[in-house]
Image (cartoon, rainbow, N blue to C red; front, side, top):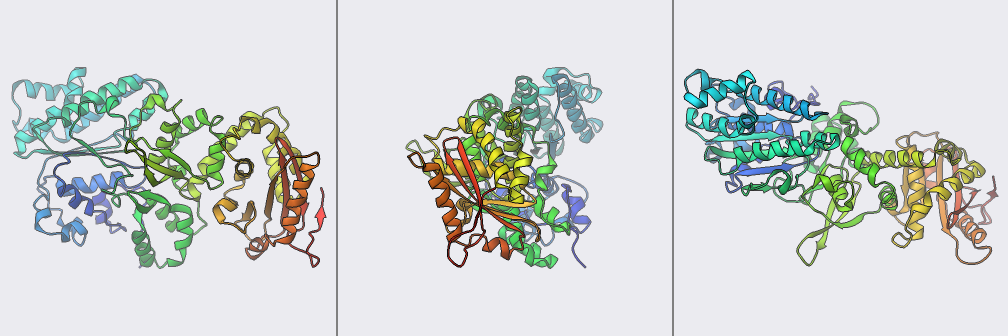
Length: 576
């Protein structure tokens, strides 16, 4: 019987008791127990990488209960690790909070939502009140929270007060688990009321986590590490293990071994290459990581790969910040689409107010949100890590293609350029129409490039890749910077045999009156002398079109050539 794959189930107990496939991440418990010095641990990771499921698992392991939950962990890493770890099994009172659905549009909404969340939390632990665990003022404060009549100050100190009550009642210090702590902060930033939300969390978290004698351990997850001065002010006992750190590197997402084992269990080992192309490429603490949501979604389907992860959220913050920076950073974004990387120092602290004008804040946001991968390239003189950032896989590439397309559409309104018409011309081999629309795009967009920082050949190649990226996912658009030397500058390969494929050779004109024509002729000669289209024909593309494209500043020439060499070695040129 084929194992059943879960999608969107972040309840560890439900998953285990229903016999669904579980990729064992319980080594995280051992790592946590083995590091008692990290009393408060923040683990920022991209969305849909298993944060909620892991916190649910930690809750099942640590939370005191009269019901034995041995069956949930039998056969898993932490159970087999032995007595030192089992000594912590179902031992502590646990305070569990999940902020992932708290995405208010207004400040009033936030106040109401957070009070309801805290009231529900107090209701879960009501036995400390009902069984006489509280006296006098403490009991009155607890009742005020339950009744919804508490003052603002009581809500701000609610985490500290509850941990104290649970410690006294159970005789064990408390484990605090907070999931997606930064979700309300993102929403508040977009809504223009971030200061109020940050102010609340600064007081709420500091009260419960800083110098709290009732606290045993705390684990927080989120997407970003909001800068200490914004939300974690004075929280000196906070240890942060971002995706750049080796600690907990394999706790979130699937490793190569995880994916291979999963494919063997499902009898689908032949799908490994597709999964690697589409959903691999993340690097957490030096470990190669796959997107678990997309891997499981693909394995549940019987169709071709799709960008599953990108459809699970509105990505409002990412879209907003990319839109703000699009014009200024267009060459770099085009370079990312063409397979280039960006070398930069990465700041692990995100200051929300800096996102609209600080380029490094943008790269950090994209990295820690899962839209870029980082490979360490060295350190600066002051000890900061210098990284190369790049798009991790084909799924994430879609974000940049869509953002680039939106930006171009906005810029080109009323300028006579039509991206859809350009695409149809490329796929039909119509060089004249391709040239006309490409000329309009170049005239109105290339003026925003800084060719002093981006080499002209890379600039034009990135520009074309950005334009053609709209063809995905029906076509695979790649440059020779991704595919290697000996390939055309741009290759457009259809996903389905029988659809058209395209190769392009790009040339930059030199000096002289006839430089543009000479560059075009050189491109045609190169297409004629090298059978660039062989890979397309082998993949079933039909027909295959070959274009030489020459640039001189913002002037463009396009000619269509035969897709392979003739017997005489000279390509047949068909100007459109």
